[in-house]
Image (cartoon, one colour):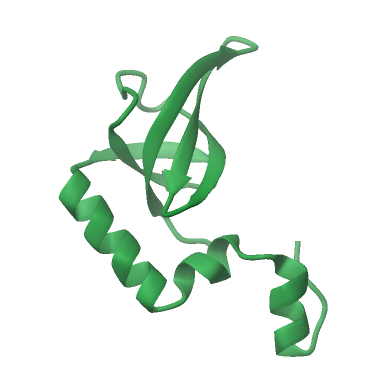
Length: 95
């Protein structure tokens, strides 16, 4: 499954002409492209899908959504160790 996840911008930098950010998704930090939200600042939250920040989100909504996703096991499913998840399911990891 590939969800749009809320995340908090920790750091912003320019990489090869592209505005990129380190974003925290409830303890998992990933690189995210900010080209669709160039005005996004450190400390703000955004909805991220397939590595792109798509929409600004208020902190309360982001925290509620992350808590819900965590309770449903969706954060581990989305960001967990693919080999571990596959072993539990009795199969091979999917790319």
